[in-house]
Image (cartoon, rainbow, N blue to C red; front, side, top):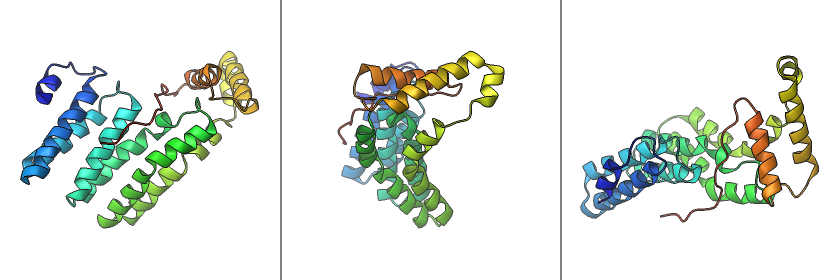
Length: 213
C-alpha cells in the first residue's frame, strides 16, 4: 500500500516525502524481519528520495535523513550513513530558524544534534577524520552562523539596492532589540521578513518536534 501511495503522488508534491518516508519504514521493517538486504537497500533508497523533495517540510526531510543514516550505520555502511546524516545537517538552518526564541532553538538543536555526532562517528569509521571534524562543526556552529549572518555589512547592498538594505537593517534592529522575538506571531513575522528580504533567504520551516519512529 505504501508503494502505491508513492506511485500515485506526482513528483514535487509536498506529500511525496512523507509517503516515501513511510515506504522506507515498511521496507526497513521487512529487511530487519527477514534479513533481506535488498529490502534494506530499497528502504535507504526511499529515504534518500524523500530527502530530495524540495517542497517537503524540513522536519520530514530531517526524519528521512536520520532514518537513512541510522539504517546504514547499523549495517556498517559508513559512507552511506554519513551521506544520510549530512542531509539532516543541510536543513539545520530551516529547522532552527530565527522565528523561534533562543530557548526553543536550543531545545530543537538538542533534539537533532545527535545527528552531528553520529555523522562524525561514521566518518571516523569510514576512514575520514576530516569529514568527522566537518560534521561536528556543522552541528556546533548553527546558532553562531545565524548570529554572524545577521551582522553582515550592508555597504555593497546599499549601493545596489538601497531600499532593500534599509529594510534589512530595520528588521535586524527589531530582532536584536525585542527579547520576545520568536514567542508569537510578531517574532515569526520579523524573522520571516529577514529571510524574505535576503537574496538567498530560505523559506522558514515548521519547527515542532516530531516523534521518532
